[in-house]
Length: 261
Length: 221
Ligand SMILES: Nc1ncnc2c1ncn2[C@@H]1O[C@H](COP(=O)(O)OP(=O)(O)O)[C@@H](O)[C@H]1O
Ligand SMILES: [Mg+2]
Image: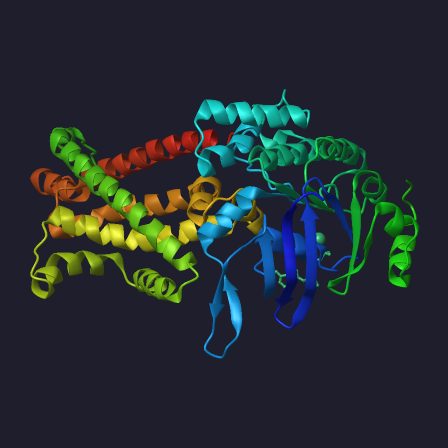
């Protein structure tokens, strides 16, 4: 068994009185590709966002390469919570890349500048080296000829591929994709999925929230159905998507009946 | 009744008026520079999650928004020596009065520009491992700045015109020199017409330069 890269233990997330995640135990091994599916509002984004600390977990631990993130803090009443220093979170985020549904490219920078930005500002690489790495990632997503275009000049699919290259350039150990194709016109979905598939073939460890169940079936090594803030059903794509055991999973899949494997 | 316009006597005083123009530009440049720096600090304080930073900045802004500029001129010039035992020359007093008041307005311009960017840009920066400072400097401010140009100019025009209050401290800026020209020539109509023309020309050049800068800054849109 490969090493566990990313792990959560008893991860909970509340927004005020709303309990979105209720004790998530997740182990992600190197090279695994985990598809997370579930209804809208079931907490899929929240789960991903807790993994790179865009959201702060309310309870539980996140471990990177077996090392817990944050430092335990004991309160006077005996409770123990975790304190996260900004510097520690910056280090974690360099190792856990994220691609957003809305791309969030930097509109004031060209394509190549977008991809170089993290390398220059965060990793402080010399310009030539950053450019080389950025070019390599843009090649991977098939956008090496758009280097000096501004994002506003690109299609949604191209923008999302730049966003993928931007995250990859940091050479993260895990990639998080939060519905990377959900805000794209249908005819642009394919090109983005092809880029993600290329990464999958290269052995990139990834967690992918998606409604593209056909894609999940072919590309994921494991599928997780999230409902009521817990893993309702998990297993191989074949087990979860073709032979679901739980009623709730079946109902969810039935509502996505249009997908084909 | 007909009035015989005669600009000759006034134009003969051109060196004095030019000296006034330079005085106006000196105060304006110093006050804008200082005001922008202080305004940025105030804006960042007001955007801070800590109330200990937010609250004093908000009080400062409210105070300056609700007091007339001339009060600050007098305060820096006449009250500082008494209260703090520092006496400022007219240039310094005028610059400080303008800079502090403009800072309050610039702060609101900056804050508005920064807040006009959604959370997505912050998150994209943080997701790459940037500190909040890095995200602010590299991602947020460069974009916010392009949205600030128009309100920023409006404030700066206001400031440029308000420099005329420095004449009340007998500082040799445009208005003060114009009053001198007037008492030398007894030609108030011509004097103040030329004065108005000089302000218009100044602001026109200023706004043309700013328009050029704005087009370059927003080329990416
Ligand atoms: N920042 C937030 N503040 C308050 N509630 C939130 C916030 N983010 C998400 N939620 C709530 O948490 C629940 C799960 O949201 P989300 O993780 O975005 O679901 P999904 O991605 O599965 O559609 C929703 O009910 C949503 O309204
Ligand atoms: Mg979501």
